[in-house]
Length: 366
Image (cartoon, rainbow, N blue to C red; front, side):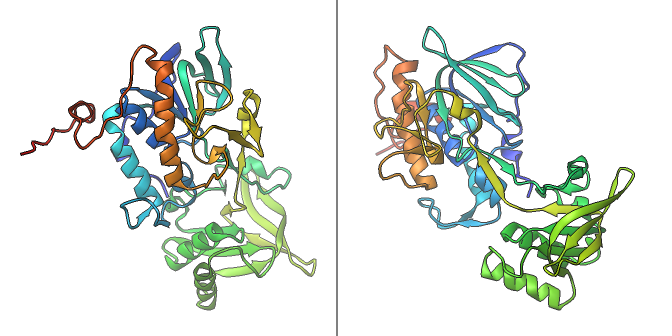
C-alpha cells in the first residue's frame, strides 16, 4: 500500500551539493525515528532524517500498513500506516528535513568531536549528534534466484506491491507462502477479472506460514475458482525479447509445468541487513548496538541508538519501548548541542515555552 504523504508534502529534500551542518541526524524514519524527531524538537533541536526507503514509516509502512496495532498508549487500535501518519503530523512543527531513498554509508568522527555522515546518494552532513533508529537494519527483499530473471525487475518482476492498479487485467503469478503472498493473491482474486485476468499462487508445499484466516480465505478463493494454487518451486522462466512470458514450476514429482504470466510477484520475505553500521566502530552484540540505559548512548559518545537496533539487559522490542528510549536519548544529547545550557524538564501541559515551540496556544487556568 502506498503511504499517504499528504501530511508531509515537503518531506523529501533535494540532495545537497554542499556539506550540511546540523545539530542532529536521525538514521531511520520508522516510528521510533519519527518520535526521536519530536523529542529533539521539544528541546529546540532540529533534525535531518535519513532512510533507505523512499517514504517514511519503516516496518509499519513497509510490512504491515493495514495491520492493526493495539499496544500504543491511549490509542486502542490503529493501523501501521495510521500510526505513521499521526507521527508525521505530530512532528510537523519542528520542520525536520527528510532525505529518503538513500542509505548512510559513512560515519567518521572529526577532530572537533562532530561526525561526518555521507549517504549513498552523496548527501553529506557534519553533525554534533547522531541517532541510529534503523530498526533491525535496512530491509532488502529476498530475491528469487534464477539466472537472468533480475533483468525483468521493476517491469514485470516485483518484490513489493505499491500500486495494485498497475496490474489490472493481467495474468499474475505470485510466489510465496507467507501472509503477504496469500493476502495479495486473494485480494487480486476477489476483485475479479476487471482487476486481474488470472491469479496463480505458487508455494513449495501445501502448508503456509500465514495467519489461519489468510489461509482459509485463499482456499475459499480456490474453491470458487477465482484463483489457482500450485505446489512447486520456480526452476526457470521463458521470455520473448525483453518480455517475461512464463515461469517454469517443478512440482514434488519432478514434473515441470509452464505457467504463462504478465506479472511475477515474489514474496519470500524481507531480510534485514545491518550493512555499513557494522563498520562504524560501535560495540555490537548479536548484530545489535550495545547502549547504556541512562541516555541510550552507544560506545561512542554523541552517537545514540534507539529502537530495535539496540540491546541492553531487559530489552523488549516494542514500539512503546523505543519511544521511551528516544526521550532519554534526546536529553542525553543536550550536553553535546548546548554545552553551556542547563536543560530543564518541562511539561507540554503547562510550559508556555513548549507551547510556543509546538505552535499552540497556552491554556488559561483559573
